[in-house]
Image 1 (tube, rainbow, N blue to C red):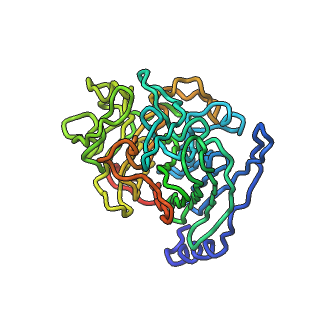
Image 2: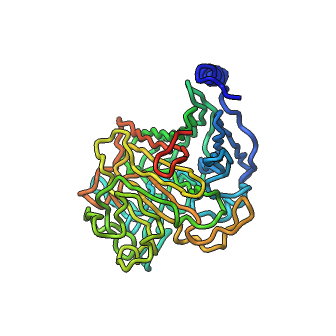
Image 3: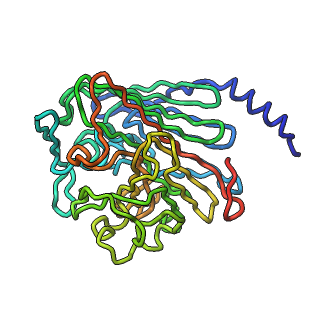
Length: 384
């Protein structure tokens, strides 16, 4: 039986009006005995997002394919213990500074700060994703929230002055919204009582065919970026903004992720594949298209919009089959990809890069939208 557009609209309006803020459910306890909760967001179109207060991690994200069949499209684990034991930042918020800071050092107002060096590509030490205990490894305060046309969960965390070597007491709020139109909106807001570098991002690994369902090499990627930031063997930017034209890093038109990943190219060699920051075409701080990914077999489409100037595309080069996911399947190399909206890596040491210093009296705000739809024609898609 067909439902008229008018009746469908009335049903959707009624369901939105009756929506309640999601309530916390137990997800386990840390070794220190701290309780961790989960919050589940859902809409009438079959999209369901579940996130936990440990690391503000998205543990599952279910979306329908072109036939209406639902699958979980993010990599992750079933239990809190697994996230605590070993995770390559599955689904987490990372910071205080996402991505790399060269040598684990930066200078600010004439003072040099030292951070933990928890990563060493090609033997070159750096600080990665906030250090030994970044935002992905702490318990946040969670609260279910709602607004017209969306359910949400707001996570709050206070990073103390000196935590992981960073200056200033940082008050950070991250809100996940799932809208009736199947947008996952991520809103960031922060203040600090001392000047501090800040670069926070969401680190979900996607596989639009379903987590544990093979590699992501057939996914077709478009990036709204004519330039990228080349890196050294240690994956630290050289400071150059180089054109992608004529290189395997050119995704200004759609390409399968695996089509050129094995090309003879120094940048691909350094990253073991794609693991680079692209300079987005829009640099004015407004919400603008950043990326689009199509998985041909399912028809699932992911679009990314952001207010950030850059996006890190990482295609799971360091996954090696040693981690077993929610469906009981080992995550092999390149079984997921990340699209981390961000400021550029190592910006505190790169004076030509956009500024990442949050100062007292300022409010940091940033928004990223992950938009889900399906492709039913092979070239055009319909929103879920």
